[in-house]
Image 1 (cartoon, one colour):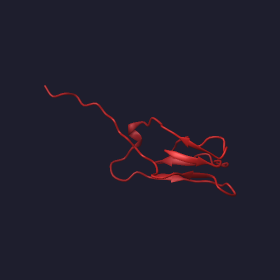
Image 2: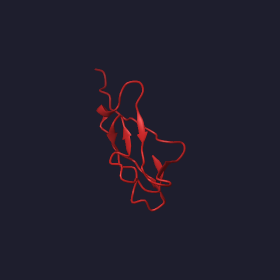
Image 3: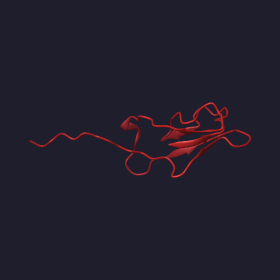
Image 4: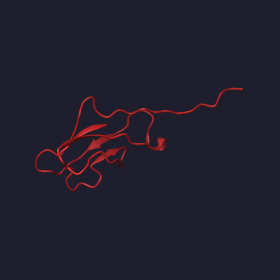
Length: 81
């Protein structure tokens, strides 16, 4: 995820995936931040997953840069006998 960080304001869970808050912003230094976060696979749902970004800043808060959030899932399979 890449964001331009104008500040998260006072919203506690400002960026969430299926209701779970994820830290993608910094100190509001008006810079670009690349976040690569490990996720518990149990957080993901089959089908649609809900991403939400909220802010109570007066001007620009956090802006998600294109192409937007990306999710890569890696898993190991057990070889068949």
